Image 1: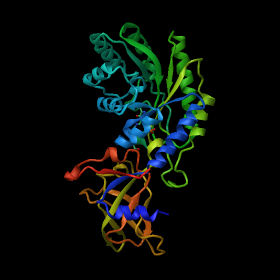
Image 2: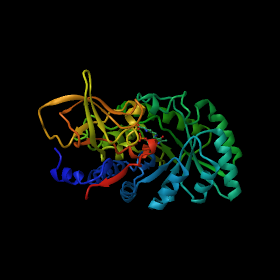
Image 3: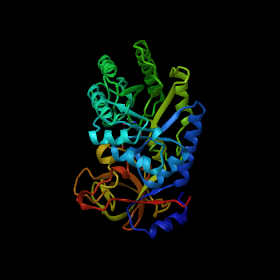
Image 4: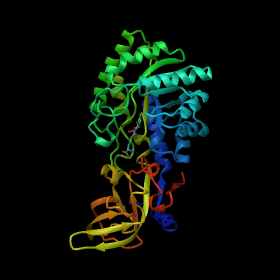
Length: 385
Ligand code: LLP
């Protein structure tokens, strides 16, 4: 299934590294863009999913905006060429320094996560003689039915303003001469695979946008966040998400006033499938109860299994289609028992030196890499296209 020329190229490279299929990335971006354009929807790419330079350039070229969660992401977005008018800045803990920098860069909007933050942004904007555009991130209490570590829209989560605090927000906004409320924002979680969940979000968003209108606020934008999940089990069959069905849910169920814009903040669905982690087998240990493959990549390169018990499809690229198979626990070299990448993975009988590919690793893979154990930070390689 692998192009033999790729295997040859990989054999000559030092491992581990992330390998990006740039043709697949372009295809994914174009499918998403045309599906969104059909309804006039605006997509902001969630930088946190992957901030590789070439990946970002490809995304900027398609014309998406940027959803940032740190001052460095805001700066990077503008350096790469994203229009500041298409940059939004979210996060529960924006520092004064980050807010000032974003104000100076005249970004499109701050997604504000607390009443206190409204006061801080207003005071800093006043000092700079600016007006900050803000959207209130509301915690809609909609369950995303995803891993509890990546659920964000429940009242017990730290994110956003709870509904009982909205009155206080409005009062703060009325007092704040240097803020302009332009919209409301939601993000209920990540790796959401059931479209009905987005339908529930629309129902809640409709209710809340009426509430703001009833209180005399005209909202220019409804930002429904990101969260669209990908198929980790079938990276080839489901290489590109069904963006058409996803956007259709919002077109059907999200009520819009004339001229009101709908914004999305997609991360994973845009970049997950184009990225793969390539690693080499260092050792194979055949035990009585278990066989282990010890790779030269571990939780320092791909933390998702250790942190969320996440599944990534693992294939032995060198072993071809050999019929002899064994079950292996695929682990890394880090001195931690949580340093595993796959459990009970059925693979062709494997040996030292074989190249292994971990699929669907383009989102929250390389960006979450660390230098723990004083390891090198994992680098990128790209397909030719
Ligand atoms: N907007 C906001 C406000 C967010 O917090 C996130 C992700 C997104 C958009 C993009 O969500 P996406 O479309 O990628 O689901 N490290 C975890 C995922 C953390 C997601 C954090 N927020 C993982 O590896 O699964």
